[in-house]
Length: 397
Image 1 (tube, rainbow, N blue to C red):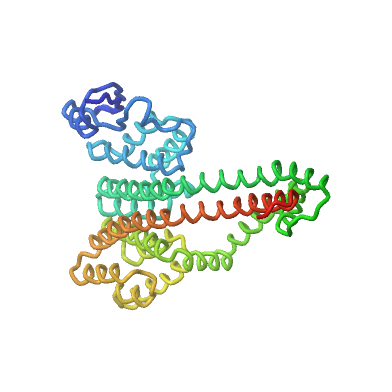
Image 2: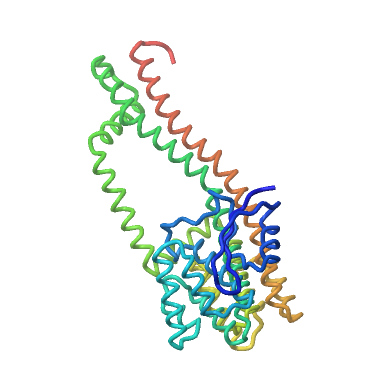
């Protein structure tokens, strides 16, 4: 049994906070519902709290807002009252002001989707279009629930990728720092000894000492070059041509991972939109916007044109040659059986799972490759120094 803190509300809108002992979060939810309390947030004390300084535009805050609003609407509370409750429990002033702004727009006669549209930096077009479809069909709570699932799966996938990259980043950082220390601190001490001895040094040692001396003297220039190089690279990537070329290079380097990632992202977005009642052409447009790789995004432009001309989506996707064959086969079956939305979500789940395996495989290859690379560089430095020492003492090498 674990101890959970909770925050909830009753049918009158009164905020209730407390502590409860239960086996898991689901048991807490059931006990609260049996007590006529609508659960808004459940967490282990000291662990599950959101950061008070976080901006509402962060994915975690947006997910929390969507999940809490879903819970209130499913409990039968009207939208304006639900938003008023969420504004009251917002953990920072920025979040509170944003929700109050949405609430004021709704009370002024705007629809929920129109109110969200006034904050494009927080709510994406995909989010707004799904809300608009939920309002049109009178199933706003259902659409919000699907949005919550979509945001959760997206966040989980992102965290999986980031966590997989932690060790390689630490490895390259520590290895790079070790090499810099050798070049700027250790080698200059040897260069003084070699200069006093006056004997000729092996070519590799001379090159290494020259590089070390240059790095020590002009380190500030190296930092400036790196800084301006990074700025130029970022500026180039902001251009349409630069972004396209860089994305094409990424596909050549890690084609399998890029294809699986974009397939999962596109299919989950499209499936969620169609299931929420968004028209297919609009859903395709929104789904194309969430694809980060411009090479794949440009190829998907032809898909919307093909569907508009009456061609099947599976056919036009196959012609674009950007999705794996299995995904195309599953989408084709979904079209033929009239269950395209469900099949798209199955494709997304399949490739999200496959993507995790591919990332693990890639990291398992990357780690020894990085260790080998760092070892070769450090080995070259050590070997050059040893050759110089042996040449000075006239010892055979």
